[in-house]
Length: 213
Length: 235
Image 1: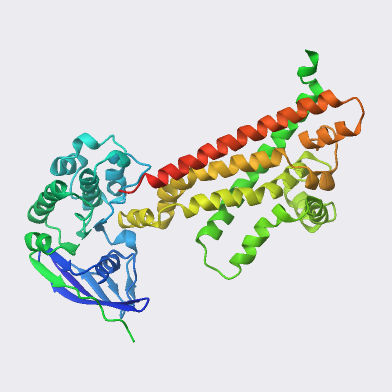
Image 2 (image 1 turned 30 degrees about the vertical axis):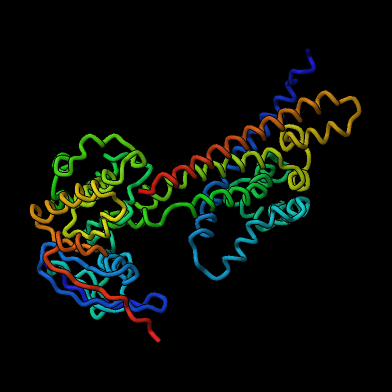
């Protein structure tokens, strides 16, 4: 389980740069908002192209500007849990969960729908529409959707930030179990020190990048 | 009582109007969607010019649009020759010509409605689909298109209503021929020219108003549904 990331990207008048190599199960990127944490996750997922650098997960190279490698988003097998959930509003929970599952190679699937719903405690939500879910329910469905897509690593972008205290505890327990039960490296972004201390085995602090003059 | 019922001839006029409009909208739908997509998502030089060209029929005098169609799609026009030689379709003095004129006039309204609905589709949902393993094409088919669909339908209904009302370009391009190009507005205009046809004018005008009202309500309801879908995916 490893992330090897060395990237640089200019966005407006900012430069986002990170050099990170980790073997931990859950690695946290910690820093104030605006430090470019989400941009780093987007670069690992393939949604944002680094100006230069190299990204490898468990030895598989996803991006390497020197070698001209830039694997398309849909082939990177990132299980991305977004800050805002991003469930498909026109699909019921079941079809949200199965969206990536149906696209994954059978050999790449980590678990079945039943296993995922048991694991996350969302079996009773399958026929609901996303807009009827509470924040905690929606975030657990989003985690399930990422797991079922045959992911080989997880990217989690402040998955607790939109939740109240009780829901935070509930989703945090789910994330701890993911970390301990599955052999998927997790890259976790947060601006909350307590959350990071509880979940992460390894913490990288991102400072506000200095503006380019 | 007799005065309220449509004569066989008037039914024929209504039927022709619906046929012309349905064909106009059906044939324009893919073109309008493609243009709406290009204008909503494309970043290319000449986008503003394309936008202006699409909207041109909305502001140019319809008689000018009809005249341009006559030049392009007449028997000796370049487009007219192409269609008759390669596809076996002619437009002059035929209902197909009326459909073409209606299509051109409806295009700007259709593109506008569709463009708004495409712009309302949340990029971030498309990103999510990509990370889950969907190619660009599959993301389009399973996320972008379904989310934009109510707006696309609203655009089609609006285009249909505009087609039913089309007058100036049609009468210039393909004249006023009973059974071929005499649609509702042309029939109403014709009846107004003849003394003693007031009851026919009333009947046809009421049908035209009813059709337009129905289309506007339907289109608005669909557009609202599209808006509701957008608000529905906060989480």
